[in-house]
Amino acid sequence: MKAFIKLSLLLVSLGMGIPVFAQTPEEYQANYAKRITQEMINGVYIPSDLDDAFSELVRLSDPKGIAEFKGAPEDSIRRKLHFGLGRWMLINWGFEEGSRMSHYMKGRGVSLPDDMVEVIIITWHRNLNGRPIKFEDEVAIIEKRKADEKAKRDAQKQVIILEKKPHKEK
Image: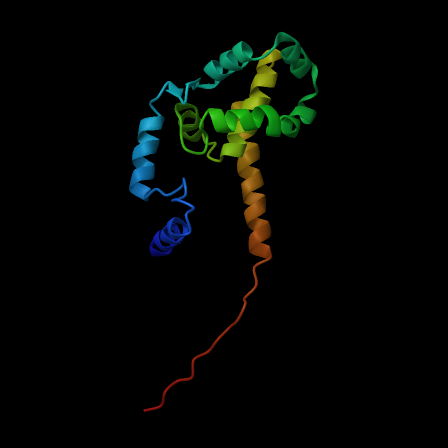
């Protein structure tokens, strides 16, 4: 925390102002607690659950775009829309700072903003095509990916230096 304060003071002294992310953990928690109850954030409606998100995406989307999305194969939309539609959701639905939609997703086992985006895109695609959304299967995919990534990191761990302190003899 002291390093962050020093950085903030340095930025102010250089005329750069205090960074936007300058929040104490307590301030972040207070803002998060407020945001997860708000129906609107920055003038944007925040869905309360998946069905509400699907309805809002239909309302906001061009019917021609929906038809194209609906007709695309699932494996191609999983990542293809992440930086377009997905980025829009991440920013406007407040997945990083907290919102009622991100809080809903966290409560269902999806904690990272990028994972929230992916799950919403995939489940909306399935919903539009009249297929079961299989939300729990998507959560299981995320958990397996996280476990695989952790196992890979653990396997690559290296001891940087091993020091042995000499014993002082009395």
